[in-house]
Image 1 (cartoon, rainbow, N blue to C red):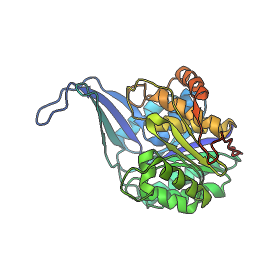
Image 2: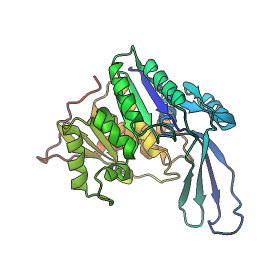
Image 3: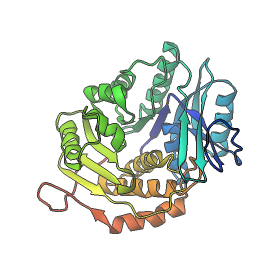
Length: 331
């Protein structure tokens, strides 16, 4: 199996709780809290570990919150390399409103990283992937204050120079800059992807497919995977474009579904699976993840069960109407 490294520059201690009803101006008595190590790369690495794989989770860590986060990763048996920073690791909050059934998410900006700190994180990530041909490096989540907007673009070039493949799950200027540098695979959600069109609105399905094809055709990314929530995923590579539909599941917490998708996708690619099969596995992991509390990784048995259902119900699209077979593979 190929080496997998994840990078989380702006991790968080995720706090999940519930209240009877979200109303203003009074004290809201919360239910029991759940604590999880959070941030895109960490959640992906946790999913990989839950599915029987191995990924090194590189992350920035500072203060008492950072130490708690490290302990939680150890409990979850997630291999990690913590990069010490001066600032305090942030916390994020998800509150379930029992009256409405809605979930409210509060995300803090995170500590400012010094140039020395984020460069150490980049160097550790590249070093972990170097010497392993075809290694997969996932950088996921927002750039914290202090990291330049082209930070992921710089990392993409360094990863490529080390002979590894760079996978990116982020949004906004950081994503745009990385696409100009050229990456192996991007995995934004549909809101993040639609923002690339610059229309200030949700784009149509045809516009999404056209934009994804344009990115691949221009060399911005070899593969574009757009997660579509309950609709599954849109996948685009040089010779095929298709959608994968997920099975129906009961949603407990929508937090972490995209990260579970990324983790399962990387694990499948590292095992040598074809792209479409790996994306089906990702869809199954995302469906299983939204049925868990907080950002708990999906159970392996649930992913395997849902994976069989995804495999039975693909929904293909191509310019000819035929079922395309993408010749791309994680070489």
